[in-house]
Image (cartoon, rainbow, N blue to C red; front, side, top):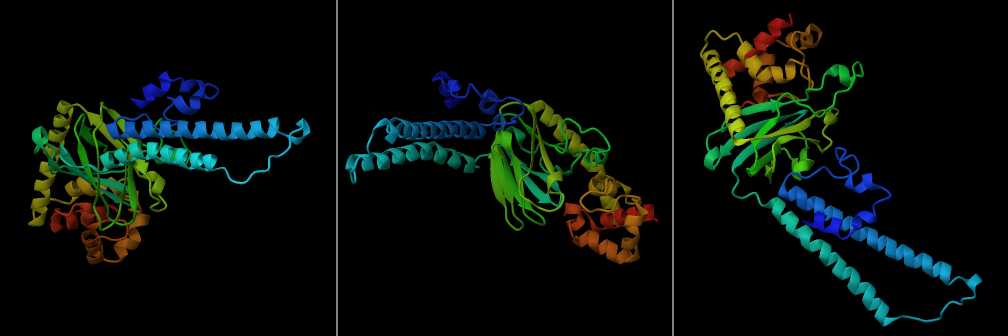
Length: 365
């Protein structure tokens, strides 16, 4: 790889005075994050090579300038030459930069084309950004992943305790970079992500994967990644999307094929009882709304995030309850402000939504 070649030719000598600046391993404090996909590695190598080229140009030009100023100064007895134009020099300073730019553009173009090649994925996941959380829906698996996690859907919201955010407790190791439900994918599989938004512009950004895709309401943009080893990888929304923009992190858990199969089976099993409960509610059954609340609504209402009134908070619920049951039901079914219709679960029966709203309203009276 380019990085290895760079090290072999002794570029480290250039950076010896500031080793932490280029080769830092302290969680990418000064450099790019350590790459864990082929595309991210190409980006890292390209960044390193271009930085070295710029450094060489800088040192060469600045060195020549200082040499000329010092060696040919008037006090040393030199007189300025009187000449106009030099065809050879003009050709050189045109041709050399041209080849330098071509040398940088060639690998850059190759990397950009690789970034955009989302064909033949092993799995497709829909990612939707909301103020201020992420929704993940496993749409389709291919090959040995076919049907494994298809249909699994959940929200991912910030899990950092409020006491840390407001300075009432020491900040944790992953402050503002931890979530309640991480995205889980198998190692060594090409994962295509379809990125969109339900309200305003967001951006799904995971530096270690070399993935940064804007989420635009009404449009679907795609990207892909294939992690090379298991681990936990963190990112953030990279598009200013409102007052809690800094509170919608991204966490991706890369696991082995067997661990992914176990995770998918667990989530499918957990979803089945809730689906049955929702169906009962839709036909007037015995669900009091708690099942739907626990599965869907609690993501935001349990902690009172993203502008959602906290469960049981009488002061927050009072003005909403005052609008009447019909208005509450209509807001939940059709969406309002940051809340998408049915909390983002389009397939949820209307009866289950109504029951969950009544359950939350009753708890706040």
